[in-house]
Each structure stands twice: as C-alpha cells, then as structure tokens.
Length: 194
Image 1: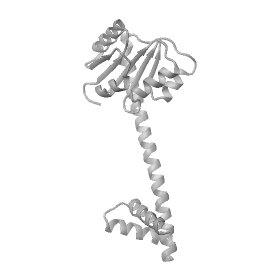
Image 2: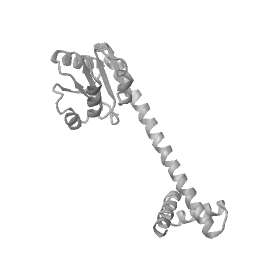
Image 3: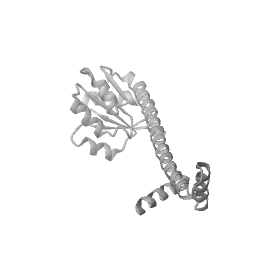
Image 4: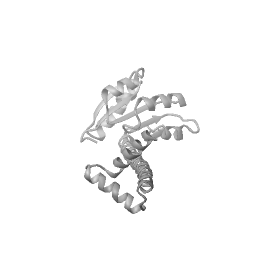
C-alpha cells in the first residue's frame, strides 16, 4: 500500500458523503474521491483504481451486494461496506464475496479509520492466504509432473527413482531450467509421441 491511501467512497446521499469525507480527513491523510452515481460503478472504480473502496448503502439485497462487490474488485483491493440494516446471512455472503469489512449500523465518523484499518488488515491476510494456497497448488502440480516424468525415465532406462530424479535434475541444470519445467517438457513430448 502507498503512503497516502486513495479511497473511493460510494455514497449516493450528498450529506452522508460529506460526513464520510470529513471523517476520513480527520482520521488521516487520504486521497478521497466520491462516486455519487452508482451506474457504471465497475467502470468508475476501475478508472480511479483506488487502494480501498468504502461503500455506504442503506439496505443491500443479495443482488446489490454481489453487484457492488464484483464491481469493486474485492480480490484486488480492500472493500469496507457500511449498511444500515442487514438480513440474515448477508454478512456471510459479503465476506464470501470478498468484502473485507461489513459493518451494520456502524457508519460513524470516529469509527471509519478503525474499520478501514481492519478491512486492510483482513484483505492482506486473505491475499497472503490466497497466494500461499496458489503456491501450494502449483507445487503439488509440479510434484505430480515430476513424479510422472521420473516414472517415465525409470521405465525407459530401467533405473531407480533416485537415479531418475538425478537425471532430471542434471538435465535441468544443463539447460538452466527448473526440474519441473524439464519434467513438463518430457511429459508433453511423451504425450505427443503416444
């Protein structure tokens, strides 16, 4: 996150928008922009490319929640949503949709900064977890390909697993590539020849 956070406030009510902006200005040095017309929200947010999105909405339905969260790119930036009322299950739906902070009846200027801090912290936590999960999946897939390539080398050369892996590793070093890349090339080539 940059030193000065850029925040887009989505608020259709002019008075509430002023209250939010004043609350944020009292809480810190932010680059604040207000979107007062939610039509074309995705495009408007994409054009502004903020660090954080703060949405104030009276009573979201599931459709509105989904539309707003998709429009704000919850996987790209923290989203804090303030609502006046909420039906059962909407807070869980908001979290599943990627909203970092879902606050019911909580839009008070003094609470804006702590809620934004919590939204940013939660977003970073989920972002780190997503990255770790993606890396774990990639490592598992690479392990499967390496094992498959080892099996092919073992069968073709009549050697053991350690020797097969050593051959793959030597080929990778000779080609200045990763073992997984060499294994993938071998598996792909074998697939073409089969």
